Length: 238
Length: 365
Image (tube, rainbow over all chains, first blue to last red; front, side, top):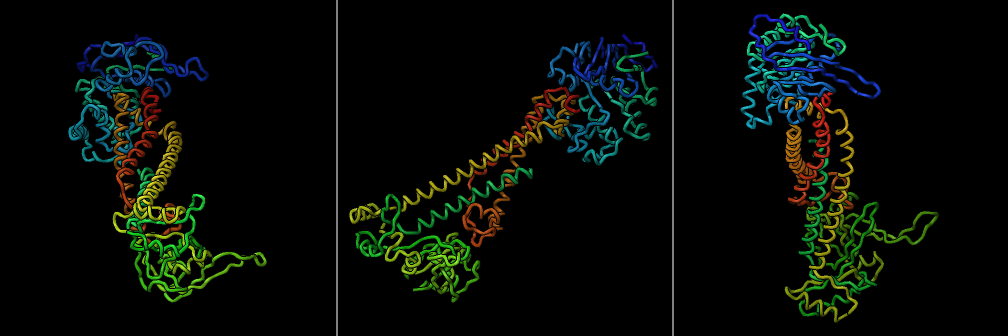
């Protein structure tokens, strides 16, 4: 199990384990033609409140691993524990509940719903649990304001720049107040100016004590990280 | 939503027009004679001697007996209804725009027909009776020439638009059934219908006697069957569109599938996604059914149902020359709502469900 990636930067990172992978494999089209081994025997630990970077070249399995840790897919083999609970044994319903309560995910291409406005996109995760539209709107607009997008609350995604779309996606990931935030290649679709804003946001989230898990092959985020894991051809290295 | 409105609009319009025509038919019967008498001809309506009208008028309770000759004829390429009636009689619910009742060798025509043929009061009108021979391949038709003595106002009903009214003896001459009428209509004092019917049957056991109530029943039955057949055909057409919608929207990697994946990734449960889609569909049906209803109302009442009336009312032009009758009932509206709901459900529930039961990653691919 790789834990050596953790480096203490004196940022008050607690040593309480939050996420643990044990021998995780992900194989697509298993035992069929065109079998793809996306992850092989991945074991790692992530401590609560840490900023963890998942590095590696394109196609190394970063997004697949993030999807597994974000409970959006199931491993072919191995176990994943979140908060000490084996999530591979949970039902789909329980996994959805876990995502709703504990995990916020920011996709590489943001995955905003085109027909909804920015605030509606942000509030989408809480629609089933918060029946009053005014409360949902207040919460969403509050988050958009935090990220400097209050003026853009009624705009649809196509009316926003790439950096703005990303901030809407981050606000959506935060609307449930999760303790784990997962970002997939957050710097790949934004310019340098937006990247600087992103770094500020990530620093703020880290200061709030959230656990951040970020996949990137961009060196610009490395200085923020408490731990770095490198993936190569689906295997952890280093 | 526009698709739904486009599908529901003809249905609501057609049913409204059918109901309107039915209501107008019932009104015509209500305003018309009380008993219609024809001869029994092997179980069908046969012609009846005109002279019998005088004898019928002697029956206790009968206030008036009017022989009529009614039939369909082509004038040019236009189908018209020819009504022959005694000189001083006029069909109910019909008003003149100009002119007067026809005398011998005169006709009064409906506004629609007058417009189609470009005729005015004083003009001559040829009415062909029958083909008597073929000369060098061309039909040789006997024609009678009539003078247009008046024009009916087509506002008074769909029947008046293509009506040709003439004296009964001219009509029987056109139909070549001299001294016979197609029926004799009797006006009777209130409460005498049954007694008069019995007297008529005693007068001649071969009379076919149809009371106003019986005619109304026929009309109801006929229109209900027509409306029912139309509704069934529409439902069948609807049912056939469902697989097409499933194919186009259900099995592809549609936006809905990706949206479902995004919502699942955000922590939505499968039943929550399905509930949302169900609620959206109800809202869509609730909006599109009234929208189609309003559009149909405007189309018929304001624009006189162009292109729809001709499908429902035989002989009507694409832009009808008469005010298209209509009656908007609650049931077609309710049906429209359920049709819309069924269609949206068929197009979305399966695709949503199939995306909701796989992993969010799979759904978002």
